[in-house]
Amino acid sequence: MNLTEHVQRAVADHPENVAIHYEGREQTYEEFWERTGRFAAALEREGIEPDDRVAIYLPNLPQFVTAFHGIMRAGGIVVPMNPQYRSRELEHLLGDSGANAVVTLPSLVEHVEDVREDTDVEFVVTVGAETEPSTEFEDFLADDTFGPVERDDDDVACQPYTSGTTGTPKGVLLTHENLYWDADVADAPIPDGIRADDRHLGVLPLFHIYGMTVTMNATLFNGGAYYPMPEWEAEEAVSLIEDEDVTLVHAVPAMYNDLISQPDAAEFDFSSLRFVNSGGSGLPMEVLETWDDLYDVPLCEGYGLTETSPVTHANHPDDRRPGSIGKPLPGVDARIVDDDFDTVAPVEEGPVDEDEAALHEITGELVIAGPNVMKGYYERPEANEEAFTEADGKRWFHTGDVGYHDEDGFFYVVDRKKHMIVTGGYNVYPREVEELLFEHEDVADAAVVGIPDERRGETVKAFVVRTPDADVTEEELKQFCLDNLAPYKHPREVEFVQELPRTTTGKVQKYELAGEE
Image (cartoon, rainbow, N blue to C red; front, side, top):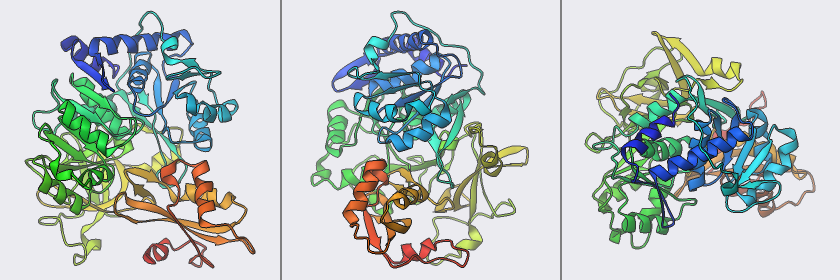
């Protein structure tokens, strides 16, 4: 079944319910469904066929939701792209995916045009205004509707990109079954599930699988109202929650930290909230405890990855263990395994005191099996071979995260095998920043690490060896990175050093750099 037909069921059951509420304007399910059909018809008119890829390069706007389900209705494959990306980053995503079209903002068209001749992009649709050579979104819509095109459960529906351990973004092939199944069970921790009278705050970016699945799709499949926010603003979020009686919030730890850090946080009226969830990176205990002290609705932590559509674990308000990522969702199999793929025995009860526990004895890699696990990486056979292990009649995905579990079924993540920095819920891969720094004529050597940050969890720091007689400054290097990368990837700190600590084989000993903090 085509994923978007699950929205069609909600349309049939709740045609007059509000599907999207944005800046005071409401769009009913009936209106939303009609617009997705017109978008699908326009794609078909322009020659987009089933399995063709269409990129969405937008912030959280109603048009993102329309385009997403319009592409699905036409049988296409969505390639979501971070609107903070610049030409350098788009070149690989558009080139690797083979996307035939892009939906974006007028201000971002230049980045598409910079790389267009090296891609398969045939046309561009812009939201809000027409910018040569694009067509404005409303003008692009067809007069009639089209689809949904019949799709198999195993057909690819969406191809987000993730870098994994290599620093080179890989397309993640998520099927119609993957996306539907995870959106359907992701509401398991919510008392009574997602209801048709729920109002869901859309602060998580829709280009990211977390926002796509647990806020957009899970809400639309159940007849609730989705409230997209293009940019995170703590004050605006508070106003929406209070004024619109928002009932559900999924966000990253940095957002919750922003809320509780407001000077009038204790005065917020969050009485309408019935479930709040944190994911994307580890939730600091201080943030959780402060939230629980301030508000009546418990903050529940969960876990997932792009490759698992994404949610695999969650805490339930009535079955919650602070410090844990929770228990596996119904239908998800999770194990902690050693290097021989043998299951590591659980501890009696977590969380353990990591300073005193013999972590090497109780930890292993977290592996996942289930209907939410991706089909594979796009045209990356070697990466697929490394990512999966067949055992006990199941196909296990290696998360790259190290953790342990307890006898009550709760799981805990203590470290990451993958060399990435998680800042405000976004993944930053050091190699990408390092390679850019090496392009600067005044940089002789560079290494990038994550350092603790009170608000973001981690932030990016670069250690740089300057070329002889170079006088490049910290601010100049920061600006160089800002000009070429999404803002969250740029180093917040740059430290100049005489040399980098290396092993005899030439590998930078990053633990020494991080230990200098």
